[in-house]
Image (cartoon, rainbow, N blue to C red; front, side, top):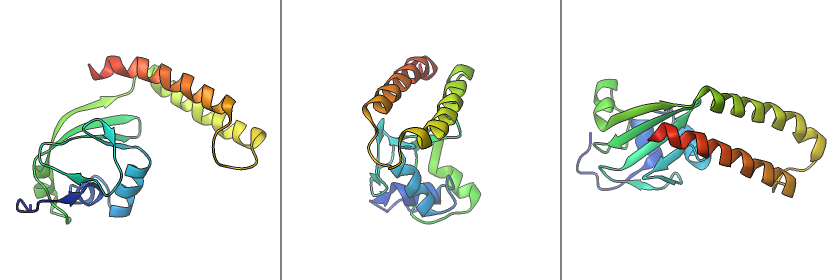
Length: 145
C-alpha cells in the first residue's frame, strides 16, 4: 500500500485491488459504465481519494465498496483486500434478471433486421431503451434501500 500517493487513477486502483486482471480491462469497464464513483459514471483517468464510494456492476451483481487505501500497482491478495472495505453485495431480482435476458435476446435478433449500420439508435430504439431503463430503475431502487 502506498499511503503517500496523492493521486491514483481508478483503472490502476481497480487492477491493484484485484477486481480486474489488467488495467485495460478496468479501463474498458469504466468506459462501459460498469463503474460508478460516488454515484457518478467515471472515465478511466478519474483520480480516487480515500473514502470514495465505488459501485462495480459485474454479471448482474453490484459490489458496493469504500476506498480505504490507495495503490497503483498490483499487490499480494491479502494486502489488496486492505485497500477497500466491501459494504454490501447487491443482486438483481429475478424479474430484473429476466428483463435483461429478454432485452439481450431481442436486441440480438432485431439488430440485424432493422439496421445495417451501427451508430446512434433510432427513435424507436431509444424509446424502448427508455422504457426498459424506467422499469429497471423502478425495481432496483427497492434493492438499494
